[in-house]
Length: 318
Image (tube, rainbow, N blue to C red; front, top):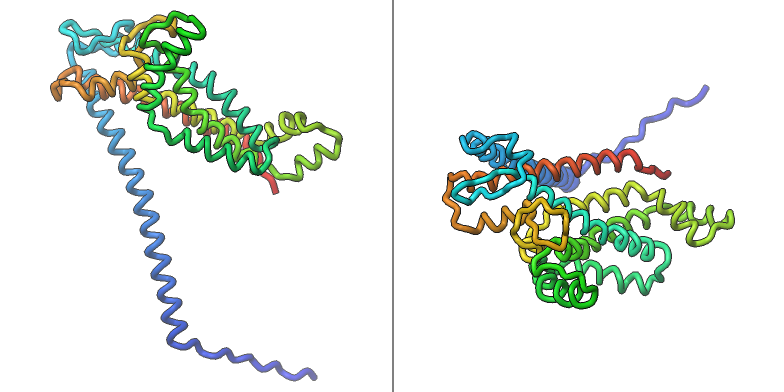
């Protein structure tokens, strides 16, 4: 017969261990509560912004001088004139044109920089270039704006290329917006490419692929979700940029498609009108919130598309 096993007695925890475990539990609860509070504050701030925009926007459309159809399709925007017009199409068009020019500059340069840093640059070069990009991202946008106005337009666009653009023009504003968001696109895309498993690269090299083929046919598709996120994040920044377009692009709402002429974006109108002497409660004052709400909806749509695309192209590696 087998001898009955005797239970192993464990020493009773002393008071110091019990007190230490209680302290850890209390600390975890405090940290959890602080994190929940931080998330709650963020949500409440967002909700407050939405309610403030929606409330004033509703009041704007309740004005007898404003019609929703005119607001959405009208080609004249002059809410502060004695005979006001409330067609937001010139502001939306100016925003889209300048954002498109900015993305045409930022996407190829940003993604090219990301591929170089991830696949071609030596560690020494990477340590030099990446902080330089981050430094560019820290330059105040007002500096970019005055650079576009005082140097880029007269010296580069008119002087070197002879484009005969106006002092204030959408082309300079769009190009400088693109330069501003290059670090955003490059940094996010490079981080995504760097997270691709090294085994995928080694397998491609083992099959005889060249460096270019590995970069464009293996790493780039594998990091596509992060690359899409970087592009959409850059687009959101371009749409929401204020100071560069306020200084460099002018404040002329127009339906012209010629970027060499002055044009006004939604953010430029908000920035210029918000700092003026617009009476609180007037129709012009409420128009600021209506434009802000329109911009909010546009940005929300861009982010929704980004989330959908990132989920569609996300790659999971084990």
